[in-house]
Length: 117
Image (tube, rainbow, N blue to C red; front, side, top):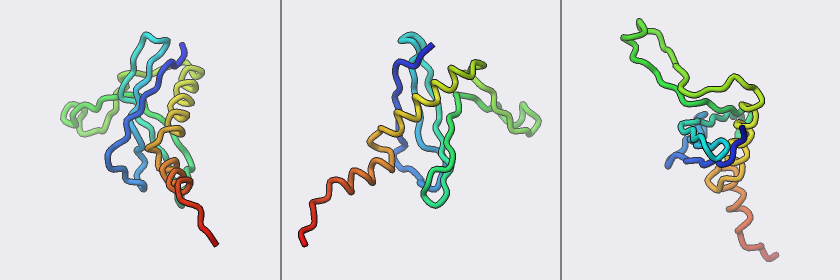
């Protein structure tokens, strides 16, 4: 299976100190649609230290789990190669996305008129 399409949705207001970056929707082999993928980044001093994705999951009520926080995967893969391919496709789409803060800062810098000295 291969990722044939990636679509990202950025939150309207993004907390740059928070870990959550965006929601992802992927299509595998032009047949299977997976929505609800989340992209997270760990940052230190405005530099990305680590980033990862989480597949869609649901969290049952605390009453039904005896007060214990439980996350149940709705979609997941046991194939490490497929997971790596999905992760790389989402990261690549995020790196190229115009609303990525890194790209937004670069676009502002590149669009400034040259200074005349």
